[in-house]
View 1 (cartoon, rainbow, N blue to C red):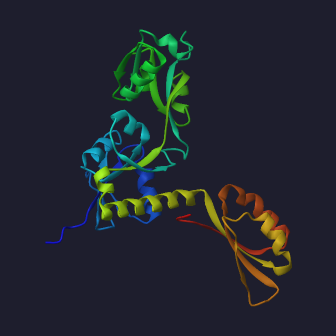
View 2 (cartoon, rainbow, N blue to C red; view 1 turned 60 degrees about the vertical axis):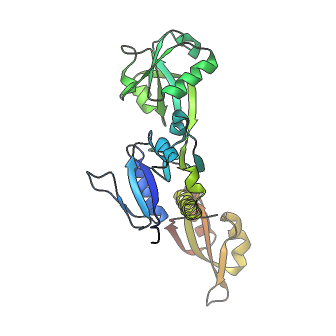
View 3 (tube, rainbow, N blue to C red; view 1 turned 90 degrees about the vertical axis):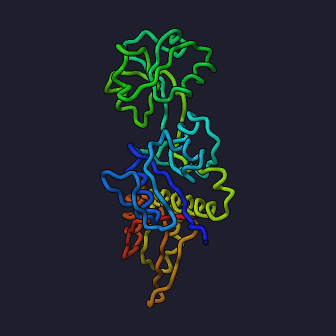
Length: 293
């Protein structure tokens, strides 16, 4: 009997869930969830998907229950597991920037620096990382696990918190101030080490990594097409920065060229008016799904 080839993939349930499923869609994988199931359907018969809390994904990947999964690197460090880090993926719930676990206290607290937390109580989900941080700083404090709503706990239930922030808005809303950064984390694709020693599974995991990274790159860029006079080519190329070199082709009118390139989306609003002023016609901007270097 031929063994059925299946890759067991864990995707994070919770704050990263929507962004992750959207990213997989952009990468070419359609994932469909039902409201009551932890096993979404994916349009690849060789992949089984499971929705798992990101805090648990590293342990399940290490134990081989999952072959690969997406989670924050913070939870890999927190669980102290031996997994293979396939690649970093620069996205989070609200931004594409790394997230920070910060040490915060009430705005009116007399504590100005971490050393002021000796013999105090700190609430956090990231217990082991926080304990290691305090040990390295020579600080003796009580670290309590927080089940959620951590920002609301000081000063009645604890003296300080270690909490994950992207923009810091929630901390400021709860009148907390940051006194140090405990850990900088990003989203990562991890894999079970035995799975990476399996030729087929390794190939599938690496394929997912390539497509996800390509999809992330495409969020920042757009394609541009345009027509221009041949005599203006050198001038236009200086205006339009290309990913490598722009694609240039001839039109039926030999005095005109078609140029196609990829540019950062944030500069498009600046260069299109300049292109127009320099005689470029038929400018078309279009979205991209993947950019694979």
